[in-house]
Amino acid sequence: MPVVTPIEARLLDRLAAEGRRVVSRRTDADFLKAVVGRGDDVLQSLAAKGVLHRLGGGQYLVAEFGAGEAEHSAPWQVLLDARMQRIGPYYLSYFSGLEEYGLTDHAAPEATIAVFGRSAGSGRSLTIAGRSVLIARISRADRWFGFRTKYEGRVGSYQVGERERVLLDCLDRPSRAGGAETIARAWSRASQRLDVERVADYASRLSHTVARRAAAMLDLVGAATAAERLAASIGASAQPATLFGGKYERGLDTEPRWRVAFDVPRETVVGWLAYER
Image (cartoon, rainbow, N blue to C red):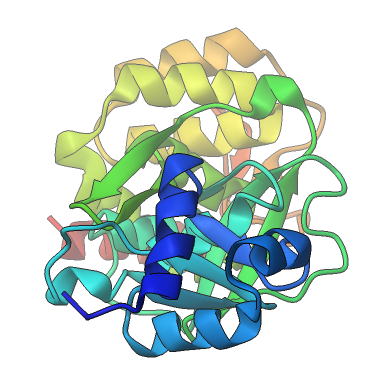
Protein backbone atom coordinates (compact mmCIF):
# COMPACT_ATOMS: atom_id res chain seq x y z
CA MET A 1 0.00 0.00 0.00
CA PRO A 2 1.52 3.41 -0.91
CA VAL A 3 2.62 5.61 1.98
CA VAL A 4 0.43 8.69 2.36
CA THR A 5 1.16 11.88 4.26
CA PRO A 6 -0.95 13.00 7.23
CA ILE A 7 -2.67 15.63 5.07
CA GLU A 8 -3.45 13.05 2.38
CA ALA A 9 -4.73 10.66 5.05
CA ARG A 10 -7.00 13.43 6.36
CA LEU A 11 -8.65 13.77 2.96
CA LEU A 12 -9.02 10.02 2.50
CA ASP A 13 -10.50 9.63 5.98
CA ARG A 14 -13.04 12.38 5.28
CA LEU A 15 -14.06 10.86 1.96
CA ALA A 16 -14.40 7.42 3.56
CA ALA A 17 -16.52 8.84 6.39
CA GLU A 18 -18.88 10.40 3.85
CA GLY A 19 -18.95 7.25 1.71
CA ARG A 20 -17.70 9.11 -1.37
CA ARG A 21 -15.91 7.41 -4.27
CA VAL A 22 -15.42 10.45 -6.51
CA VAL A 23 -13.92 13.86 -5.79
CA SER A 24 -13.77 16.79 -8.22
CA ARG A 25 -11.29 19.65 -8.32
CA ARG A 26 -13.97 22.08 -9.45
CA THR A 27 -17.23 21.14 -7.78
CA ASP A 28 -15.48 20.11 -4.53
CA ALA A 29 -13.11 23.10 -4.41
CA ASP A 30 -14.56 24.48 -1.15
CA PHE A 31 -14.59 21.01 0.44
CA LEU A 32 -10.95 20.42 -0.52
CA LYS A 33 -9.85 23.83 0.74
CA ALA A 34 -11.51 23.24 4.10
CA VAL A 35 -10.02 19.76 4.54
CA VAL A 36 -6.49 20.00 3.09
CA GLY A 37 -5.91 23.56 1.90
CA ARG A 38 -4.14 23.13 -1.44
CA GLY A 39 -6.44 20.52 -2.92
CA ASP A 40 -4.81 20.27 -6.35
CA ASP A 41 -1.43 19.32 -4.90
CA VAL A 42 -2.93 16.62 -2.68
CA LEU A 43 -5.05 15.14 -5.48
CA GLN A 44 -2.10 14.98 -7.86
CA SER A 45 0.10 13.36 -5.21
CA LEU A 46 -2.49 10.71 -4.39
CA ALA A 47 -3.02 10.02 -8.10
CA ALA A 48 0.73 9.56 -8.59
CA LYS A 49 0.70 7.01 -5.74
CA GLY A 50 -2.19 5.09 -7.31
CA VAL A 51 -4.54 5.85 -4.43
CA LEU A 52 -6.73 7.96 -6.71
CA HIS A 53 -7.54 7.21 -10.35
CA ARG A 54 -7.85 10.11 -12.79
CA LEU A 55 -11.19 10.12 -14.56
CA GLY A 56 -10.68 13.24 -16.64
CA GLY A 57 -12.44 16.57 -16.29
CA GLY A 58 -10.75 17.15 -12.92
CA GLN A 59 -12.44 14.11 -11.34
CA TYR A 60 -10.75 11.35 -9.33
CA LEU A 61 -11.92 7.91 -8.20
CA VAL A 62 -10.88 6.71 -4.74
CA ALA A 63 -9.39 3.20 -4.67
CA GLU A 64 -10.59 1.03 -1.80
CA PHE A 65 -8.42 0.69 1.26
CA GLY A 66 -6.82 -2.73 1.53
CA ALA A 67 -6.69 -3.32 -2.22
CA GLY A 68 -3.52 -5.00 -3.43
CA GLU A 69 -1.22 -3.30 -5.92
CA ALA A 70 -2.81 -5.09 -8.89
CA GLU A 71 -6.25 -4.01 -7.72
CA HIS A 72 -5.28 -0.34 -7.75
CA SER A 73 -5.34 -0.50 -11.55
CA ALA A 74 -9.10 -0.23 -11.92
CA PRO A 75 -10.71 -1.62 -15.09
CA TRP A 76 -12.00 1.03 -17.47
CA GLN A 77 -15.57 -0.10 -16.75
CA VAL A 78 -15.16 0.85 -13.07
CA LEU A 79 -13.69 4.21 -14.03
CA LEU A 80 -16.65 4.74 -16.35
CA ASP A 81 -19.08 3.94 -13.53
CA ALA A 82 -17.49 6.54 -11.31
CA ARG A 83 -17.70 9.15 -14.07
CA MET A 84 -21.33 8.32 -14.84
CA GLN A 85 -22.38 8.86 -11.23
CA ARG A 86 -22.37 12.60 -11.99
CA ILE A 87 -24.09 12.24 -15.36
CA GLY A 88 -26.94 9.77 -15.00
CA PRO A 89 -28.11 6.14 -15.07
CA TYR A 90 -26.39 3.96 -17.67
CA TYR A 91 -25.40 0.43 -18.54
CA LEU A 92 -22.87 -1.14 -20.92
CA SER A 93 -24.49 -2.60 -24.02
CA TYR A 94 -24.23 -2.94 -27.80
CA PHE A 95 -20.66 -3.87 -28.82
CA SER A 96 -19.27 -3.39 -25.29
CA GLY A 97 -22.01 -5.70 -24.02
CA LEU A 98 -21.02 -8.35 -26.55
CA GLU A 99 -17.42 -8.05 -25.33
CA GLU A 100 -18.54 -8.46 -21.72
CA TYR A 101 -20.22 -11.80 -22.44
CA GLY A 102 -17.56 -13.12 -24.82
CA LEU A 103 -19.99 -12.98 -27.74
CA THR A 104 -17.43 -11.47 -30.10
CA ASP A 105 -13.72 -12.05 -30.57
CA HIS A 106 -13.17 -8.49 -31.74
CA ALA A 107 -12.33 -5.45 -29.61
CA ALA A 108 -13.57 -1.96 -30.31
CA PRO A 109 -11.61 1.19 -29.45
CA GLU A 110 -14.84 2.80 -28.19
CA ALA A 111 -17.10 1.97 -25.27
CA THR A 112 -20.82 1.77 -26.04
CA ILE A 113 -23.41 2.52 -23.36
CA ALA A 114 -27.12 3.17 -22.99
CA VAL A 115 -28.13 6.13 -20.81
CA PHE A 116 -31.53 7.05 -19.45
CA GLY A 117 -33.13 10.37 -20.37
CA ARG A 118 -33.16 12.70 -23.34
CA SER A 119 -30.57 15.08 -21.91
CA ALA A 120 -28.27 12.61 -20.13
CA GLY A 121 -24.76 13.12 -21.44
CA SER A 122 -25.85 15.81 -23.92
CA GLY A 123 -23.01 18.03 -25.04
CA ARG A 124 -20.42 15.83 -23.35
CA SER A 125 -17.45 14.21 -24.98
CA LEU A 126 -16.47 11.32 -22.72
CA THR A 127 -13.13 9.54 -22.78
CA ILE A 128 -12.34 6.83 -20.23
CA ALA A 129 -8.88 5.25 -20.03
CA GLY A 130 -8.22 6.28 -23.63
CA ARG A 131 -11.58 5.01 -24.91
CA SER A 132 -14.17 7.29 -26.45
CA VAL A 133 -17.65 6.60 -25.07
CA LEU A 134 -20.53 6.30 -27.57
CA ILE A 135 -23.89 7.08 -25.98
CA ALA A 136 -27.32 5.75 -27.00
CA ARG A 137 -30.18 7.44 -25.16
CA ILE A 138 -33.29 5.66 -23.92
CA SER A 139 -35.91 8.26 -23.06
CA ARG A 140 -38.88 6.08 -22.08
CA ALA A 141 -39.04 4.77 -18.51
CA ASP A 142 -40.91 1.63 -19.60
CA ARG A 143 -37.91 0.64 -21.74
CA TRP A 144 -35.33 1.14 -18.99
CA PHE A 145 -34.82 -2.40 -17.70
CA GLY A 146 -32.72 -5.51 -18.15
CA PHE A 147 -29.35 -4.62 -16.61
CA ARG A 148 -27.39 -5.62 -13.53
CA THR A 149 -24.44 -4.64 -11.35
CA LYS A 150 -21.16 -6.45 -12.01
CA TYR A 151 -18.50 -6.37 -9.31
CA GLU A 152 -14.74 -6.23 -9.94
CA GLY A 153 -13.28 -7.57 -6.72
CA ARG A 154 -12.65 -4.83 -4.18
CA VAL A 155 -11.98 -2.17 -6.79
CA GLY A 156 -15.56 -1.29 -7.65
CA SER A 157 -18.52 -2.17 -9.83
CA TYR A 158 -20.36 -1.10 -12.97
CA GLN A 159 -23.68 -1.55 -14.76
CA VAL A 160 -24.03 -3.95 -17.69
CA GLY A 161 -27.04 -5.12 -19.66
CA GLU A 162 -28.19 -8.69 -19.15
CA ARG A 163 -27.16 -11.00 -21.98
CA GLU A 164 -30.66 -11.00 -23.46
CA ARG A 165 -31.01 -7.21 -23.26
CA VAL A 166 -27.62 -6.70 -24.93
CA LEU A 167 -28.60 -8.91 -27.86
CA LEU A 168 -31.88 -7.02 -28.28
CA ASP A 169 -30.13 -3.65 -28.05
CA CYS A 170 -27.89 -4.81 -30.88
CA LEU A 171 -30.97 -5.50 -33.01
CA ASP A 172 -32.41 -2.12 -32.03
CA ARG A 173 -29.29 -0.17 -33.08
CA PRO A 174 -27.11 -2.40 -35.25
CA SER A 175 -24.68 0.42 -36.03
CA ARG A 176 -23.64 0.44 -32.36
CA ALA A 177 -22.98 -3.30 -32.42
CA GLY A 178 -20.47 -3.81 -35.21
CA GLY A 179 -22.92 -4.68 -37.99
CA ALA A 180 -24.82 -7.68 -39.29
CA GLU A 181 -22.13 -10.36 -39.12
CA THR A 182 -21.07 -9.48 -35.56
CA ILE A 183 -24.70 -9.51 -34.40
CA ALA A 184 -25.57 -12.81 -36.09
CA ARG A 185 -22.50 -14.57 -34.73
CA ALA A 186 -23.26 -13.21 -31.24
CA TRP A 187 -26.80 -14.62 -31.30
CA SER A 188 -25.48 -18.00 -32.41
CA ARG A 189 -22.75 -18.04 -29.78
CA ALA A 190 -25.26 -17.09 -27.06
CA SER A 191 -27.97 -19.52 -28.15
CA GLN A 192 -27.03 -22.37 -25.79
CA ARG A 193 -27.18 -20.08 -22.73
CA LEU A 194 -30.04 -17.85 -23.83
CA ASP A 195 -33.18 -17.44 -21.76
CA VAL A 196 -35.55 -17.42 -24.74
CA GLU A 197 -38.57 -16.55 -22.61
CA ARG A 198 -36.75 -13.49 -21.30
CA VAL A 199 -35.82 -12.53 -24.86
CA ALA A 200 -39.46 -12.73 -25.90
CA ASP A 201 -40.65 -10.78 -22.85
CA TYR A 202 -38.06 -8.02 -23.24
CA ALA A 203 -38.51 -7.74 -27.01
CA SER A 204 -42.28 -7.32 -26.69
CA ARG A 205 -41.70 -4.45 -24.23
CA LEU A 206 -39.23 -2.59 -26.44
CA SER A 207 -40.79 -2.06 -29.87
CA HIS A 208 -42.54 -3.94 -32.67
CA THR A 209 -39.45 -3.59 -34.84
CA VAL A 210 -37.17 -5.13 -32.22
CA ALA A 211 -39.75 -7.84 -31.52
CA ARG A 212 -39.97 -8.85 -35.20
CA ARG A 213 -36.20 -8.93 -35.56
CA ALA A 214 -35.92 -10.94 -32.34
CA ALA A 215 -38.53 -13.44 -33.55
CA ALA A 216 -36.49 -13.97 -36.72
CA MET A 217 -33.26 -14.47 -34.78
CA LEU A 218 -34.91 -16.84 -32.29
CA ASP A 219 -36.17 -18.94 -35.18
CA LEU A 220 -32.76 -18.94 -36.86
CA VAL A 221 -31.01 -20.17 -33.69
CA GLY A 222 -33.53 -22.96 -33.15
CA ALA A 223 -36.07 -21.42 -30.76
CA ALA A 224 -39.04 -21.47 -33.12
CA THR A 225 -41.66 -21.93 -30.41
CA ALA A 226 -40.55 -18.79 -28.56
CA ALA A 227 -40.41 -16.95 -31.89
CA GLU A 228 -44.01 -17.89 -32.69
CA ARG A 229 -45.26 -16.75 -29.28
CA LEU A 230 -43.42 -13.47 -29.65
CA ALA A 231 -44.79 -12.87 -33.15
CA ALA A 232 -48.33 -13.60 -31.97
CA SER A 233 -48.00 -10.99 -29.22
CA ILE A 234 -47.12 -8.11 -31.55
CA GLY A 235 -49.59 -8.61 -34.39
CA ALA A 236 -49.24 -7.68 -38.05
CA SER A 237 -47.43 -4.72 -39.61
CA ALA A 238 -47.93 -2.96 -42.92
CA GLN A 239 -44.26 -3.01 -43.91
CA PRO A 240 -41.65 -5.57 -42.87
CA ALA A 241 -38.73 -4.57 -40.73
CA THR A 242 -35.29 -5.26 -42.13
CA LEU A 243 -33.34 -7.70 -39.98
CA PHE A 244 -30.21 -5.59 -39.53
CA GLY A 245 -31.54 -2.07 -40.00
CA GLY A 246 -30.87 -1.64 -43.70
CA LYS A 247 -33.21 0.19 -46.06
CA TYR A 248 -36.30 -1.77 -47.01
CA GLU A 249 -36.76 -2.35 -50.72
CA ARG A 250 -39.34 -4.34 -52.64
CA GLY A 251 -38.04 -7.70 -53.72
CA LEU A 252 -36.06 -8.44 -50.57
CA ASP A 253 -36.34 -11.99 -49.27
CA THR A 254 -39.07 -11.67 -46.62
CA GLU A 255 -40.09 -14.10 -43.90
CA PRO A 256 -43.89 -13.64 -43.65
CA ARG A 257 -44.22 -15.25 -40.21
CA TRP A 258 -42.20 -12.48 -38.58
CA ARG A 259 -42.66 -9.74 -41.19
CA VAL A 260 -38.87 -9.42 -41.47
CA ALA A 261 -36.95 -8.72 -44.67
CA PHE A 262 -33.41 -10.00 -45.07
CA ASP A 263 -31.24 -6.98 -45.90
CA VAL A 264 -28.35 -9.48 -45.94
CA PRO A 265 -28.94 -12.66 -48.00
CA ARG A 266 -30.58 -15.34 -45.86
CA GLU A 267 -27.97 -17.94 -46.83
CA THR A 268 -25.21 -15.60 -45.67
CA VAL A 269 -26.86 -15.14 -42.28
CA VAL A 270 -27.35 -18.91 -41.94
CA GLY A 271 -23.67 -19.40 -42.75
CA TRP A 272 -22.60 -16.97 -40.03
CA LEU A 273 -24.81 -18.74 -37.52
CA ALA A 274 -23.52 -22.18 -38.49
CA TYR A 275 -19.89 -21.08 -38.13
CA GLU A 276 -20.35 -20.36 -34.41
CA ARG A 277 -22.03 -23.69 -33.56
